[in-house]
Each structure stands twice: as structure tokens, then as C-alpha cells.
Length: 395
Ligand code: PHB
Image (cartoon, rainbow, N blue to C red):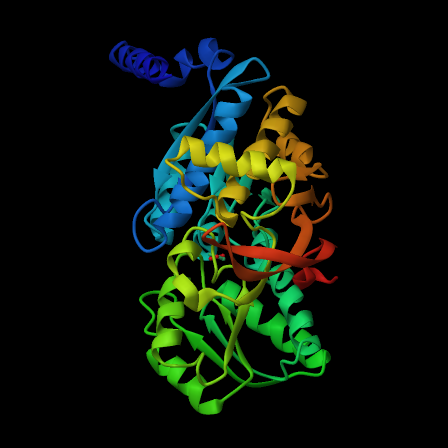
């Protein structure tokens, strides 16, 4: 692959030296060119665990399903945006213009996906959102397809479970940006509808949050529980401060979306996490044969690493891309988006569909409790809502 790109570059240099337009060398190679997928992820910085998980899963999918689609090689180009939107946008632009990628993929945080949406629209490049989860992202471009989840979708489960299980008064605590605000909105609406009362809604900064003053406030207010949304990777700090501040001893329960008990960090949280109830679309402990095979293969290829929900978004995203490329025989643009719509398959998380109208993922949402299984902490699923569409978009 590398060799081919160098050769093309050399040819371009020869063309320039000969005074020919560079494009004149391109058509002869177009058919044998690889199909390129540009995967932009935070590989460094506070959200690097998302990048690590998605990249590992995308590579696992390719290793399992071959490096060729529709008779052409598939080349995955991984770029690190460090979690900064300006960088994501610049990388996307370069991938489209210089590398001529057929698909843009990845997007570890909502602002990074939103910054790229106009580039997808202008260049008619399908953009597969494998991680970011604010409901409105899908509306930012008709070229976006999502294989992760939405916060309204994930929040539904716990917002309906809590009032039926003795939790009457709740304080919400969310990261102060798109997905957090989505989670807060849906939690307040559904929990209140179920007879609960939200006594306060706290928002913490996305970057370098200090949870201490917020947790102190929760402690003083003495709710039955605090509902939490924090992006993947940050939950361990919260859990540590939750016990340090004695909220557990004060009788405050921790509930939330599964982002807070993310499988990537859950096992290091220790006993403090035991009993935490969350709702989410994926647990590494999901009991299906497909998931057992996925977890085993992922661990084998990555030094025993446990896949989290970000990994599943990346793995399924590659599946959606491969299946669509087979259907279009390698053609991109609008045809490729059309071939992504309506796909239905069994993911490691359970059955999923890419909604043909909305381009968003429809999936089961599980209610889970942190338990020790075989000496390790897992989110053990004990109930589920079936085929949940994003309620942020009119369910
Ligand atoms: C997002 O920024 O959309 C996001 C990031 C991490 C999560 C959920 C949502 O765990």
C-alpha cells in the first residue's frame, strides 16, 4: 500500500517536472487504487481511550474480514486529532482532498463530528460516526450515518427504571456539552413522568473537571441518587471522589448512562463501583455467542484489552462500510450512503438496524448492575428495552 502511494507521488512529481497537469496521471491508476477509509480519532489527550478502542476494533474487523472489498484493497488511514475540533476539520479536509478517501469515520466527541459535517456535505463523502452521541449530530449532514448510540436513547432505560425501584429524588450531574445536555433533558422528562423529582441539575466542564464542589453540593442536598453522564474515560475520577466525599455512606446512590462505568476502566474502579446501576447499549458481559467471540478476539489481538462501547461502535461501523462497499461495488458518495441505510445485523451488542429514514442506529438498551464476575467487575445486564430509536428525534 505504502509503495503504491509513493509511486503515485513520484509520478505526480514527474508530471509536474514535465509541465503536465498532475491530474493527468490519475485516471490510469483509479481502478487499481485502494479504497481509502479515513479514521479520525483522539489518539492522544484525555479522550485517548476512545481512539485506542475504536482503532483496535476497526483493525480487528479488517483482520477478520479481509483487506479487500469489491476486488479492491481497503486502506485504513488513522489520524490523531487529539480531541480538538480544529484539528479534526483540517485532517478531514486533507483526507478528502489529498487522500481521496471514500469514507470519513471515527469522531470521538460531539464537537469533532459537528466540525466535520460541512466537509462531508460539500465533498459528498459518507461520514460514519462511530463514537459521538449527541442526538442532533445526525441532522448536521445527509452524509452522516451513526453506529454508536445517542444519549437520549441510552438515558431512557435508567430514567424509567429508577422511579420503579425506590428512587424518588435525584440530582443530575452531567458534562456541560451536547451529550450531557441531551442526557439531562431526557432524564428529567422521563424520571418526572415516572413520578420522580429532580431537585437540582448540575453541569461540570468537559475538560479537566473538578468534581469535588459538585459532589459536595449533592451530599448537602441528600437525594436518593445522583444521575451522571460523563464521556467515556472520565468515570474513574468521579467514582473515586464519590467515595472519598462519603456519598455512598451518606446513602446517595450513583446511577447513570453506561459511559460512567465504561468497560475500559471499570475493572480498575474497585469495590466502589459495585452495585452501580446504569443503562446502555453495550456491555462486554453481554451473553450472546457473537459477543463472546468478539470479546475473545479483541482481547487476543490487543494484549488482553477488554472492548468497551466505543470499540463496538468502531467494529460495527466497519461492518456497515464493508457491506455498503460490496453493494456499490466500491462506488462512494450518495450511493454509498444509500447502501448503508437500512442495514440490519447482529452486533456484539445485540440486534441493530441503521434506520433507513434517519440514518441513526436503532438498538436494544440494557439495564445493568456492576457485579464481580470471576474476580472482575462487569456491567451485568438484567433487563432491556427492545429496538429503541433515538427519542431525541420524535419517538
Ligand atoms: C460525545 O462527545 O458525543 C460523547 C463522548 C463520549 C461518550 C459519549 C458521548 O461516552
